[in-house]
Length: 558
Ligand code: FBP
Image 1 (cartoon, rainbow, N blue to C red):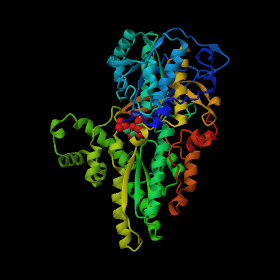
Image 2 (cartoon, helix red, strand yellow; image 1 turned 45 degrees about the horizontal axis):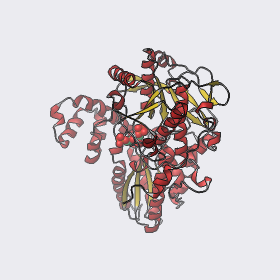
Image 3 (cartoon, rainbow, N blue to C red; image 1 turned 90 degrees about the vertical axis):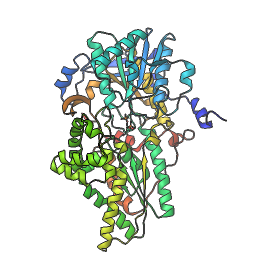
Image 4 (cartoon, protein in one colour; image 1 turned 45 degrees about the vertical axis):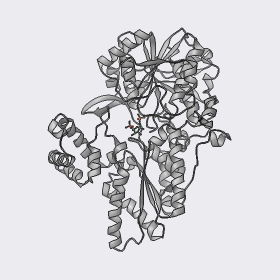
């Protein structure tokens, strides 16, 4: 039996391309500092809450400037939140920089996410360990988790773990919530004068941790290419058999960056954009009308097939649903403590809930099929979010579209036949073998994180920019985490959080989609991207997403 596939074996030997200034090696890197920064919004609140790490400058690595401090040190690393292709390469880049600086340096990996550092569960990396994971997908090197690092007790335990292992810096690889917590930890450790630094790395397939300084989070490239391959295959199948409408829910907890990118890569007949639904205050009924009209128009032209992309987070962007879910969240927080509710049958729970929700919300809740009601009652994640990956929005839409089409048929407005297939693509993409782009980008982010540590910084996010250019032209540096923060309501209280980047309806990516969607709905313009290629011409293997390419042309906001 073979232990590794031929491709896996070959990829272990891939040498990731490093960003320009990092290429000469950790010992030659110099740092330049810019001006003091301020928070993107609510600056005085953020400054008060993060008085020790607030306002630091953006930094850039290049060949001039001040040298780094490469004294011997131990570093710890944590993978936090959902998997994203390339995480192993962040750790490999960090490890290589750390060992190149001083072979006595040690890298510790905390097991199972942030809880690993609190509970002091760890491994120590060596060459043999790291080499088995180079350029591979997944987070299985040390595992991940969604524990929120935020309490005094967790911070005390983190400090104790660091002291026991003589760790002077922690790298947290995570999304907006994890990096918000990284900033809180950096502030706490600095306020206590511990000398322990915290550096974040921007991770999430959702692509919503980005701003003027961070062009894209890692994993988005590989995940969208993986989904685009699968959607392309489905489109070809639909176009061959000509008998099914495929409704595909695509991951992306809140933002529709994944759906939009996949739509641009594949040109499906329908792609719903949550942010547009919210902006236009579209009701569930009007969304169903839109989808049914596209199906009907195609069906009346003899095309009883098509592909519709549904964003995972859609349900929370439909105004009446959003209001109902907020009311439901508050209610469940109270009912959770009531054991008679916890032990009740689902049908009884629905009645209790309907009787306690505000009347408009009760109406919306009661109108949903039992399957969706049950899914809405499932546990929230540690950040208080509904687990949208478990809500079968694609099936809800199929059912509602079927009813609408039957009505249209009875009115003589629809002469076709509707036969459906439902899919959910999410986990299929989160652990794919990283594309060359993600392998290179992640390795650079990890290597760069060690440069930030060696520059004595804390509360920074590792940044690599100019990503649509060849890696030799990428610009490495760091952005203060406080610069990306603002105050938002969470669990009924105002909290400091990294601002999530939703799809901008006046941005070039949505505009490109908007200009084409009508044509894609009526005619069959399907594009079949095929599988990610790792070897071959650079314009096939190294290109990044359409999103990044379109956004790189947009003038920077001041
Ligand atoms: P992160 O934000 O932590 O990167 O995770 C994103 C994601 O992949 C979402 O797209 C999805 O809703 C969620 O994770 C699902 O994760 P889980 O299975 O832990 O609920």
